[in-house]
Length: 272
Image 1 (cartoon, rainbow, N blue to C red):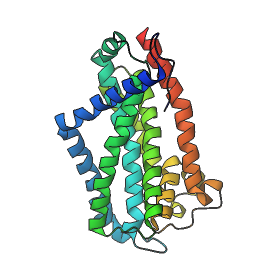
Image 2 (cartoon, rainbow, N blue to C red):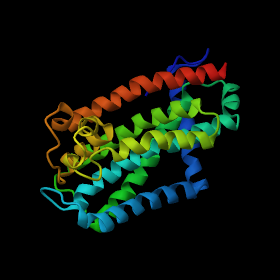
Image 3 (cartoon, rainbow, N blue to C red):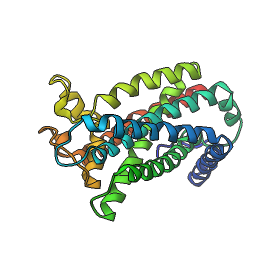
Image 4 (cartoon, rainbow, N blue to C red):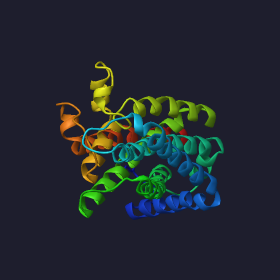
């Protein structure tokens, strides 16, 4: 979690309590606007059904069935697109003048942003559980132990947290929700599909394979396949292909280290 120095009179403990209050504020919006979660789940389940039943018979996977290969890719895609939801939410809050209201309160400047990212992780955890249940219904299975499963679930949420900081930063740059939606999907869509999420890397053109190997969506997908014991065809000899778990953690640290300070600085500049 990235935090800036609290306003005068605020202690570190108060900063934490401010963050928790904002986190709870964001989580309370979910039952009040259930359509957000419902359509996010429906969209993800639709991808599961389309790829499992429409394309599954046409895509051969070495060492296992396509549905087990597919599901970690669906998880990674959903978490990558979650940054678009964060972007839209932050832009909407900025447009409605919420920043001005928070600025008038004696609260830590970073609480607005960190509260949003923590709430998004909790929200995505719920989406991920629903997706896993959908995957079990179409034939996905976890082949390794409980520890490996929890490690896979944890690294997925770590990725969601890192991507939420990207969304927080982008959401403060764009002028409207419509622009935010277009920018987020324009960035996330290519990195999601130019990856190993849905097809083995060797099926891609040779000049695209290096990009796909190092793509954070690819490393997350390969990491979950490894931890869940799902089919994971050879993807090359690069560090990213041979150490997907470690590479995913590195990507997450890099994203947070870059975008969290940028997002907090942007927010502080906006609040002046």
